View 1 (tube, one colour):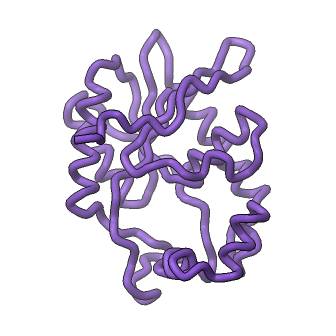
View 2: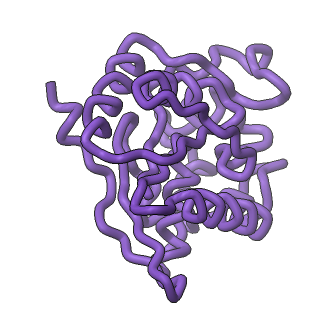
Length: 201
């Protein structure tokens, strides 16, 4: 299976720009180019299923691959980005840019739930695992399942299958992809992480 991080997008300028309490921006110009590059990179695979999340940036990234394969993406709520509570929208970007002490603590302790109102870690882990298994189940008959998802979700997937620290795989690039294999005994192999060779141009 392949996990693709959505293309680049500009964060909402204000909390008032949130949709349903979540950050849901469209891809920017760079993100659209990244989506096209991912589609070209995946064209050599025999894809049997495509997944996206309810947020626009994943469905827009998946659109070109869906058109190229003739497959309709399945929307998978379980792989939507971690909910950041009071830091949804511009909050986390602004705090990171200025080196905010609370942001530094979240990164140091590797705990999203330090953010007021954020999704509890156990709930996030449970739903991500459920989504991961759903994607793996769709990789049948030698075909590849591709999930277009989010940075923290990819990080959590790899944490679970590798036993790493919580944020070890958090820094994955927009438009990058990572490859995982679920073996018949349900053990996992991480074949690659954060591949970006297709984005260099």
